[in-house]
Amino acid sequence: MSIIIDEFRVLENELINNVLYFALGDYYSEEIANAKYIFRKMLDENNYSLDEKNFTYWLLWDYRIKNGNNFFQEYKRVCGNKLSEKQYKMLEGLSNTYLSIYEITSLKEGKKLTDIFSKKEILVKEGSETLNNNNLLIGRIVELDGQNYFLDECSTLDKRFINAIEKGFYEKFEEYKKKNRICSIEEFIRSNSVLVNSFTNIIDDIRKKQIEIDNKYDVYQSNYAVLDYEKLCTALSRSPNIEFDYNDDRGAYYIMYEEKQNRVLSEIVLAKNKLELECVSNKDSDDAKKVIEDMAGEYIKYMNDEVVVLDDIL
Image (cartoon, rainbow, N blue to C red; front, side, top):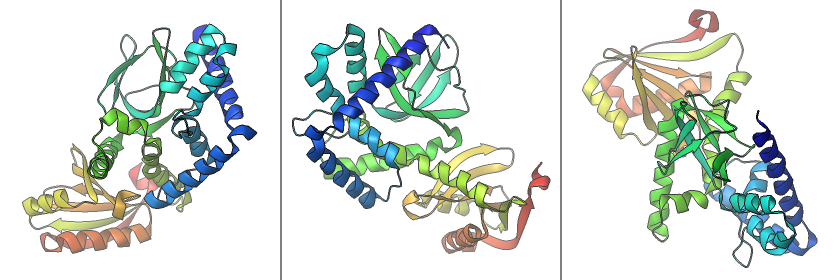
């Protein structure tokens, strides 16, 4: 890690801690109480599952106090004349950054990223040594002295879920435009960090399920013969809870969600003559079979269930 990055991290952590301490002061106690109420209401209304850390970042960046400022902007207004030039520039960058999800599109001559929602391309030359093309990155980018940096609090997501994340985002964006004023995608992203964070729940849920399940087993698999491939493909494409993922030598892969797309229920592998449902628990397998049979029972014929042992896969 270069000295430049070391200095950036020190400055980043110092200012974020100072702004948090500032926000939690007695003067803003009513604002904090109001923010907690709004945050809890937002989670309940949208069935989000986020933690205290998510609230802290939402409070500092997304919540607006009575004068319209977020807490970084308010700290700059109140304490800006006490800051060094470098601190002031950093604070401006922190004030304007927003949470989004990025795809790594190039690792040559710097790290070229694309915001998967706005499609905006950004070059990150520093502090991104761990990036690779198999992951998405969720985080905030700050521009300082002509360079783009990821803030320290960022995480990777499984790139296989990019289609599902994009679909969920654009559905929420269209719903918002129908109920509220027309806005740009970037404006929508800036004001909906909780929504962006919520997309990680799908992936986190899979990981937790894999830990909880008996280590002897890996996949609960249900096998079906395909009676009408074309009509089955049409039925899958029309389902609001099934998302096409990718193709490989085995066939076409789909992801089946529970209602409202809050959790992955099954992976579907479709070949010309066979359909497989792959789940991480017996209950999920039962639920997924009911969904597929209710939706497309006339195009498939149930064959058998099996539990694929980890050794069989390896």
